[in-house]
Image (cartoon, rainbow, N blue to C red; front, side, top):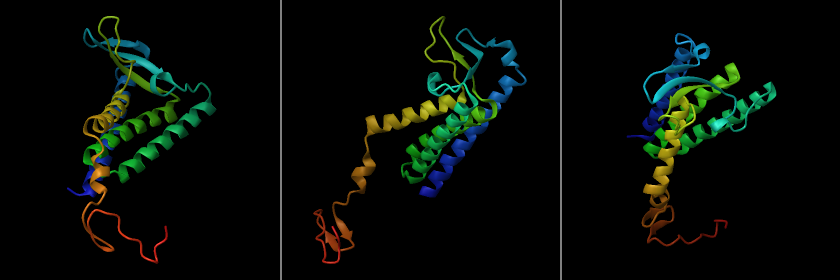
Amino acid sequence: MSLTRYRTEGVALAITILVIDQIAKFIVAGPLALKSRLQIEITSFFNLTWAENRGVSMGFLTAETDTARWLLVALTGLIATVVLLWMWKERARGDILALGMILGGALGNIIDRARLGYVVDYADLHFGAFRPFMIFNIADAAITIGVLLLLARVLIIGDKSAKSEAPTSGVQAGGISDGAPAAKTENEHV
């Protein structure tokens, strides 16, 4: 497959996550009226619970003022832009898809913060009183899964791209290479 196709898949995944996230938030805020009900028990280990997250991950960098809110929107927008640029430079399909997940989740939460002043969280996974995660949403899950996939690739698989890009033999601009660095010509600068 081509790099263009990988990038298209990454962007399509980001848009899909963004749309699903916003639809889910619309449903819990609108038809389910979760904000006024506060909690709906779905199973013995999963509830829909209304939470307004005014910060970023786990409530860090809480934005209590309007100025802080817009600074947080700008900061997270900058991070999303960096993720998009990274996605465009990336060559590995798996990494592009992981970055697409992160981008889609980031955009979903940025829209909430810009529109409402907080991020709507609602997914409450628990085992009795034990809660392995804070209340989250689809965007948060996509960001977390994308980051874990990138970490797994680095820690388990390693960085094969750096090894494969280093030429060891073959034809270079200066002629045939035996793996040693090509000799500098008098026109090349150090």
